[in-house]
Length: 135
Image (cartoon, rainbow, N blue to C red; front, side, top):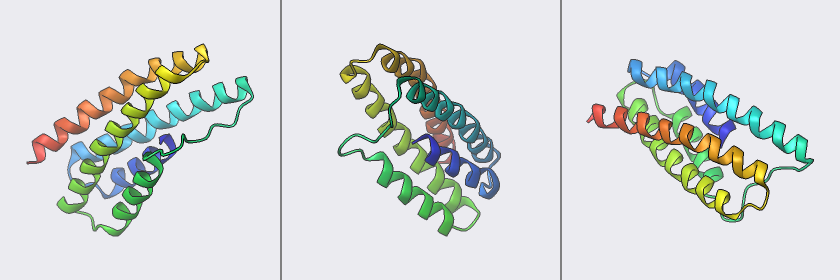
């Protein structure tokens, strides 16, 4: 999810028409890179290889978003496609993180999830505000 959001954010930072969309894309690139680094550090410390849970909707969602963003021309249609996809993606990631926090036996992983959940919620709140302003 972090790699996909960083990548989509980089596309939006250059193809976004509205300043809010470009700024949000830059924020996604920066924030999700930091989240990815934190997750990788914990995985290394625990000597585990992270993998998506069974039935994870985020991977296919991310691929669809990337395909859509790459094939949509710069303009209002691009901005709408990016914002709509980010709303859906952040809802899915927040749901997945909430479930994972409740299921994990590892306190360090649980702490990391609880630490990043407000960041993900903040992203969702921001992108929903952008979406509302676009209507």
